[in-house]
Image (cartoon, rainbow, N blue to C red; front, side, top):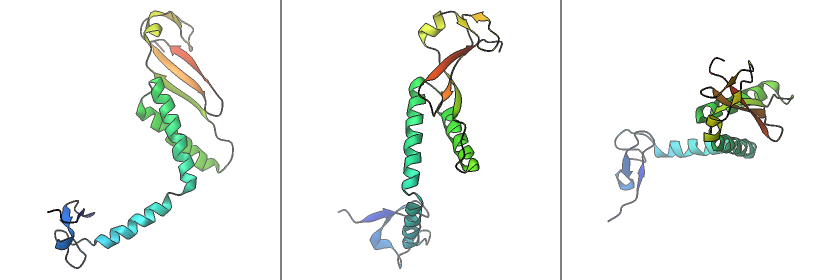
Length: 147
């Protein structure tokens, strides 16, 4: 027999609805109605203006993940943009970026020139992707192990 049940938001235990004592969890005494009201408040916080920001973050994250960038560095980049945009209050934000991405097999075999010192190298170093989010495309540069 399947009795109706729910998970208590206070203690995170499974509680059957017929076990509730005056609408409260028998284990911790938490009212299930209070959390339903709070969850509606949270839903009101996320409105349509946040949806566009979430979609933007999704596509930026997807684009850089496909390049092989670290998820942590992508999230740091996105949160830095958000902080800059909130501080500028509608003024022009700087959308430039630079992320380290893994080298492909072809990159490991070819001779590369360091973007900082101009030295030629084959092994080691870093592959960097840089650009501006407000413009299409990006540029790839290499940095030698010394730089």
